[in-house]
Length: 117
Image (cartoon, rainbow, N blue to C red; front, top):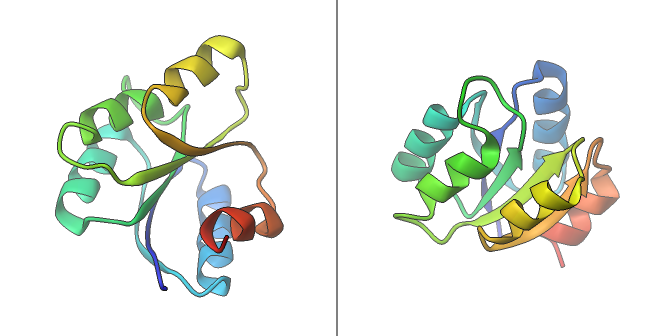
């Protein structure tokens, strides 16, 4: 099944790499955004199946805060991609019904195991 994927990543190169990975696995990237408010709006309007969410993104709202807002209207699966794996961050992430928590950079094989189990 083709999944609609929303990418939330403020590093343009990582965003492009993730988009290429998702598309090479046969899925559709519905949008790529760089900050929390744009992620919330895209999740509301595009109804993705999966969100690839960086935790540290542009602005005052981090990726976990954005997922807290998205959870108010959607149970979309979320895959966190982060360079920050401290226990407090992991605990916050787990409270948003996370599908996977991955340390950057993610490999295409990691993404394949998550999106195409």
